[in-house]
Amino acid sequence: MRALVSPYSEVLRGPGALAFTTSALVARVPISMLGLGVVLLVSGSRGSYGQAGVVAAALLLSLSVAQPLQARVADRLGQPRVVGPLLAVHAGAVVALVLAVQAGLPVALVALAAAAVGASLPPFGSFVRARWSFRLAGTSLLPTAFALESVLDEVIFVVGPVLVTLVATQVGAGPAVAGTLLFTCGGGLAYLLCRSSVPPRHRPEPGDENDPLPWRTLLPLVAAFVGMGAAFGAVEVSTVAFADEQGRLPQAGLVLAAFAAGSMVAGIAFGALAPGQPTRRRFVLGLALLALALVPTALVSSLAPLALVLAVAGLAISPTLITGFGLAEHASARSRVTEALAWTNTSLAVGVAAGAAAAGPLIDQIGASGGFLVVVGGGVVGAAASLLLPRRRAAVLA
Image (cartoon, rainbow, N blue to C red; front, side, top):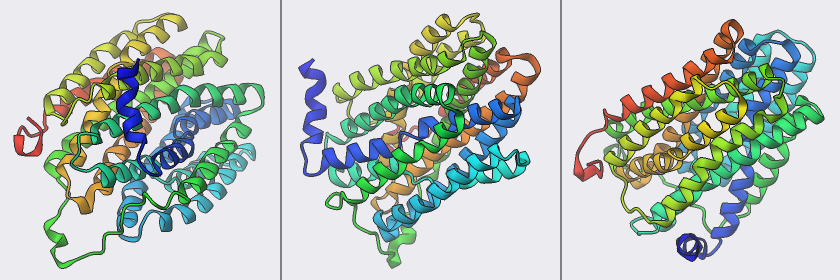
């Protein structure tokens, strides 16, 4: 046990590390709640998983477009000058979304409100990884720090789905969605107070045009992450529909938590092993294993086997994400790290949106089994895209 804990304790021992990591963790809990909360809110109000998928997709697509832009501005102006205004807009957008659904407004207006929610959510995952990159660049502890953040992401996806499902089924889906603001704003304001670890602003200089984003690496990474995200988004909508078909809707969150728990366990072990520099081979293998493990989701007939299948598939997630983030960070110039990490984060959101949007209509037509076909397809797309990564050892992609 000490061998597992020691690398993480060393990373967190630095000045202010525990504070900015904890506050960022709280602030990004809603990432695991908003998509599912919207599906529960819209499907419960309108009886359509197709409309729920469209609204969830609008939220996640707007997030995916906005977050790289937010990260680029943060590189130029500094994270504190970006986070505060975004939190204010986000709070208003969440309230508007809940009211729009409850008022029975047309789905187009509801989707517009959801888009505002996504576009105003600060990219805390990219921000906190940029802080680690600034603090630990060039050291053997950076992969462990990235592993820590991926483990914390999975903690979020263990707790978030259970929490939002519990509140939605016991209190109401509207309060469940609105309640995400307690985490976003509370954690976000605490994160703003962690000034000592903020990466320095990058002031544009004449030579900056020589620091382009590493698109030869980023484009295949983005495509692979989109495929992974599509599988994740379809899993979320399909699991809710499957639990509903079984008359066990309150247990949907527990099944999704099993998916995240498998990833969390693998992430803890992976980070503690201090795997060193990321490699192309590790990323390709991780996505191949994930795609293979997701195939049985289309074959299960009850919730318990589905939870087991998802838990096993989850074991491939964290190591693959950690490696992917590492590849993006390693290939990027210092002046573009936050932006590069935002592209990988946001490509996951694009995939989640696409997966949710594709699964919803299929579920309406043929049931939850149709949604799980999207899950399998997303895994295959991600694995195939990873093969397009360049093999150059200079970019740590061999």
